[in-house]
Image (cartoon, rainbow, N blue to C red; front, side, top):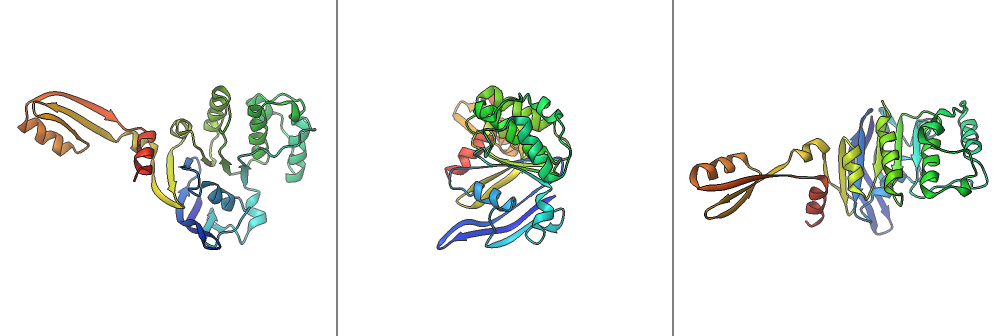
Length: 260
């Protein structure tokens, strides 16, 4: 399990993170969402060891990350928002190079699963380059996958292919940040919403889908409620003309929280 507890990051007088806490368990996909400047990328950079927190705890399976960086980094697969690739290499050369750095045997299976052709990376589309980055993140079979905006700038078909591939991975803890809430709702078991450096919501995606609003049209007007007891009171005391049920989506919850 990845444990993040009380994460604070300051830059001079500016506090980028204000006590961020959450968990990601094995076999779980967690989406990290929020507006620009919410602290998503800062959080991710801390979790992969690119920057250190001012205070707080990061643990992988109960082991302190910053006391065991070299060991634990080998258990993480990371994809940054901007692909950092070697354009003059073919995809296979690039992945073999990283396999050698990790001391593991290269398996072409990952290229086949992602549909990556063996041609020069510089000749590839943005979507194909992103697939190469994802393949690189998996080359050493890590337990934890941490991706910063993996669907950013990709066309819908490439995004869906990548989302389905990530969904097929078993027994890994996956955390990714995203602006496109569709892929978060499609992929994730749980979601963390950040605003101004703080976690303002954490919950199961299925629970969000289960949040219903009853819209009751009566002779006196329209009543909207998510309280079943209030619904029963209206049914008992008013002449009801119709009842509709609105199911909340992640997008609805997100914008509701952002407006507060």
